[in-house]
Length: 229
Image 1 (spheres, rainbow, N blue to C red):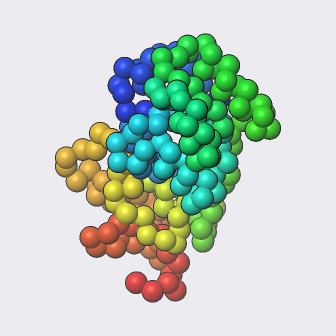
Image 2 (spheres, rainbow, N blue to C red; image 1 turned 60 degrees about the vertical axis):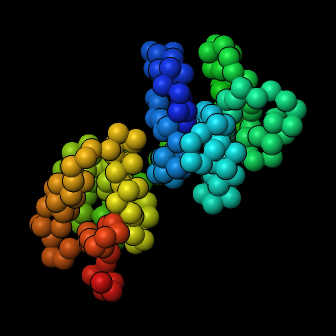
């Protein structure tokens, strides 16, 4: 399974990684709801493990926005220390599919996750090919081309390109790109600018017109040659 974990408690997060990764599951994680929304908007997951008590955007708000704004129907299992009927009803009303009270058994958690995936159709998460203009990117193979010419990038470059293609031609705020690349551990230096420069060299320099545009003070976007500045 490909699992998105949204949990701010470092010990719980470490336990989940220690249990699931050796079994061959692929994990992504965020420590707040906003980071979780960003990852859910950019990637396909089989299931989401969601803590209810999160800083900033709590689990109920995350789940509601996941369903209403992203139109994402990935199964969600909520983790919480609250076990009242009212709390469980609130979780299900927000769009959750299952509810597990802390402390919990990791074995039971895995069984519940597998059941959610089966009920969702039993299909593993897949990422569709992203296209904009003459740029094509396949997240499954990590291969990018422009005008059928291979565009070699670093892992970070591919992550940035995927984010830009997902929202193209809309502007992607620099904060969203930093979150996608570094999660909550964003570097103090302007490392994003360095990676954008490398992406621009590979994506634009060999071709007749640039597609990667900087929106000063806001972020970046991909645009066709006839698009307004």
